[in-house]
Length: 113
Length: 111
Image 1: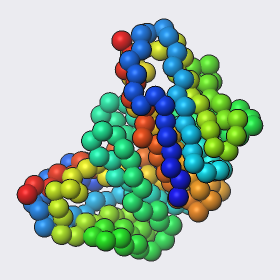
Image 2: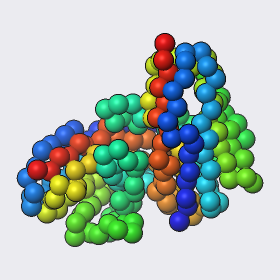
Image 3: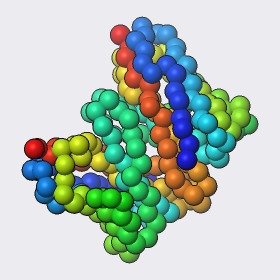
């Protein structure tokens, strides 16, 4: 199993600012992902966080807006840059073990005013 | 890109009823996940399936790879089962793909 923590758990930010979300896993994992859940919607994959190299972004998401770091096998950060109210969402970190078991962090609830 | 469809979108039932939630997808996958999300956002993985059937307590999940269809069943439903149930699929790309999610089924079990 894997236990995931995220910081912060929630934040209220002003438009035009940036927020960095941290994801810490209690064990080494190969695959780490960042998802977004907009209000009333299901989850959408933002990117796969690759250890030691640039993240792989899904269509509609770009590195300048959502820069991701993954310096090792247990930690990743997602930055939401130049925020607008449309970025108000829950951001979730997720990991997948070699067995395909999937674990989710508790999420970061972001409100942009 | 895989299209994941869930039905029903909303379901209200009485305590004790047998519940079925369906999921279909359009492209071959390596695995299918059933997830549970309670108010407040926490997501718990219930099942990961690549074939056949799995059972955990009152929950049963089945998958038919040929028909690209999966079902989640809840027997003897209870108000604590009230949650959003989400079907999500992994692409057949060797494990490097993130999940593609259905829109979820909002389940309410009334006492």
